[in-house]
Image (cartoon, rainbow, N blue to C red; front, side, top):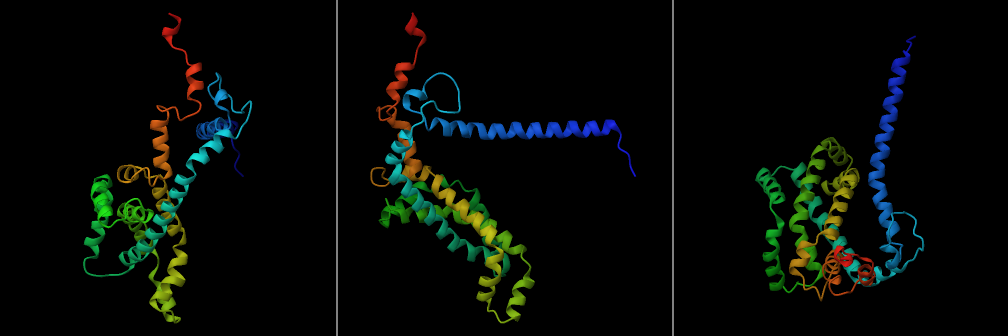
Amino acid sequence: MSVRSPGRHLDDIGFEVLRIAALAALLAVIVVPFVYVVSVSFRSPAEFFTAGIYLVPKEPTLEPWVSSFGSLAVPLKNSLLIASGTMIISLIITIPGAYVFGRKEFPGKRIGFYGIVVALMFPYIILVIPLADIWYDFQIHDTIPGMWIAYQTFVAPFAIWILRDFFEKLPTDLEEAARVYGCTQWGAFVRVILPLSAPAIAAVGFLAFLTGWNEMTGKLAVIALFFFVSSPVAAHIIARFAWRNEMIPWRRSYLKRRTFRGDDE
């Protein structure tokens, strides 16, 4: 039976205290700003610019939420449609492609996959102008399907790269066993490979959805803003131009409360 010395026991307690303190500090750095942003969203314009930092609003109101969702309802719907379509189309394209690259042998397989990897390193912003020309030639500009197709230029290579590695590491015995029990190659893929790959497919789909939701540069560059606007573009327009044009209702409240050094001179 081993006996621990009191010094070692105190060291363990001190290490545990330091570990908990470090985790608490990290959690505070992450959570406190988020909580403060949520708190600010429930404040009235007059309370927004008052001095002092506090988490609980003195006079909570839903006015900022109502006005924001009222002005961004259509852009949010557009972003949801763009992101969902981008995710679905990317999965339809990349699941078969990644499966073939990961589990089948064919001429040019290595060169083709290296081409996909090179596409990942290509700055997609360079493709904005060519894509815009193609959109206008095929009359798919200012349309949601146009965005679905355009986003596949950089979403599909990334998704194939991730899923190919996952498919490649699955044991081949699983498919062989399914074929022995009477499954066709398609049946083995649907009944065995897809269920086992569900976590990787869900992760890739989520990343594709986020890309379609958050990406703004291409939308801002090639979409006619007055006909079709998604939420990142709308937020950029509001942030850039609304202040100047007094479209933000609390601008005048801020100007009344702002003091300059030259005012007292």
